[in-house]
Structures are given as structure tokens and as C-alpha cells.
Image 1 (cartoon, rainbow, N blue to C red):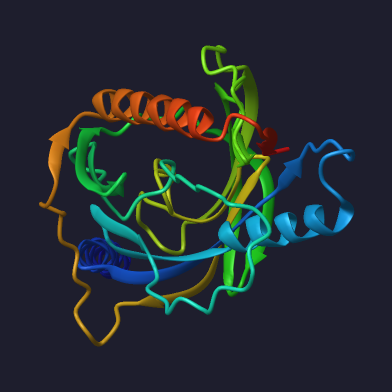
Image 2: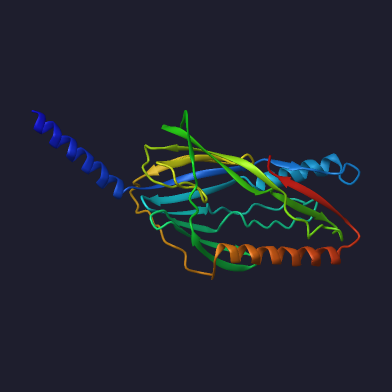
Length: 279
């Protein structure tokens, strides 16, 4: 009798491993971001302030799809039809370099490829995944039908500060060094989905990450389909100028300074509104 139990246990473990190797899924994530707008009441009235808040809030409410197997994933924004434009109060130039058009991660090989379309040019950012020293916590909660466990990590990063220019401004403090801050990232993962992956650039936990909060942005899973009938396509993007993450960051920084200088010189009689995106 003991022998039979031992053999059964070994077969059960083997079956679980095989299933994990063939494991695929599609997860839908919703993103939201806290927005703190610092305005001079003598320059912007309350109605304009409210419209700007609503406009920015909608910009950061987005839906992403994560297609994954045990070792790879593709994360990209869900395609949607653009709605009609309703009278904009201010001219806004929104440059989003934090997100990605197509983000491919290979957790086994510890690398990623990010196809990103900015400034009308497509870049193919290839680099190594940065391992995080997650701290495991004892907290648990349910997200949908899945039991999730809490993990945290502290990160030092530049404060997320953006700008909306109204009629331009010559004094944009373009040479100002970014202010740094330490943020605590909280992730909730479920071992019920045995993949070392998650939304955006998050990975490294013993189960799929279903929710992440970094103090300013929340990413939460709203739907999961495991082993769908249709084959899950996970293809590494190939289109674009190949650069490293460091090279891409320098290109973006240089381009932003050029745009800032050009915009301020063209509209030198206006003023500037600084927006802090975060907590």
C-alpha cells in the first residue's frame, strides 16, 4: 500500500510540471493614476482646472492585455476606437515614454524587448530584465476567484513631473536636476497561476502578479482566461531602431529639451503650469 501511494504522488507531481510547461493565458489589466495638479488660481479658473483634471484622468485610464506562457509574455494596450474630440481648453502635448506599444519579456533568459513609438519614430529597446529583491509579506486577499499574497519592494526614482504649457514660457527650468524619491511598490500575486510574470515590467514572484501599486499608479487584473481554445500568440517584436534602455532614455531626454526650447521660443508671452503626476 505504501508503494502505491508513493508512485501515485510521483505521477501527480510529474503531471503538474507538464501542465505548467504547457500553461498559457490571457490577462486583462486596467490602469489608473493619481494626479496632483499645482495651479496658480490667478492664471487658471476653477472650470479650466476641472476640465484639465478630467482630461488627464481619462488619459491614464487604460486597458492592457498580457498574453503569457511559463517563460514569455507580451504586454500591449488594448485597441480601441478614438472618440470625438470635445473643445480642448488648453493645448496639451502628451509624451508617454513610461509605457510601451509592445513589451515582450522572457523571464527564463532574463531579457526584454520593448517596441516603442515616440516622436513619430519606432524604437526597439533590447536589454536585460532587472531582478527585484521582493519582500514577502503575510497579508492575503482575493482578487476575483484567486487567492493572492502580498510582496513589496522599495525603489528610488525621479519624481514624475509633467508639464502643460499654456501659450508657452521662456523660463522652463530645463536644466533642473530631477528630484528623487523613494517609493514602495506593492504587488499581489497568485501561486494558483504558476508563472513568473506580471503586467508592465513587473515579474519575479512565484505566481502571476494580479495587482500592483507604486503609490501613484494602480494596475489591476480584471479578467483572466487560462489555456484558451484559440492559441495564445507570443511573438517578440522586430520592427524599429535597435537601442539599449540607456540609449533610448538619452534620446528621449534630448528630444524633450529640444521640444521645450522650441515651444517656449515660439510662444514666449505665455505661462507654464506644472503638473505632478504621483502621490
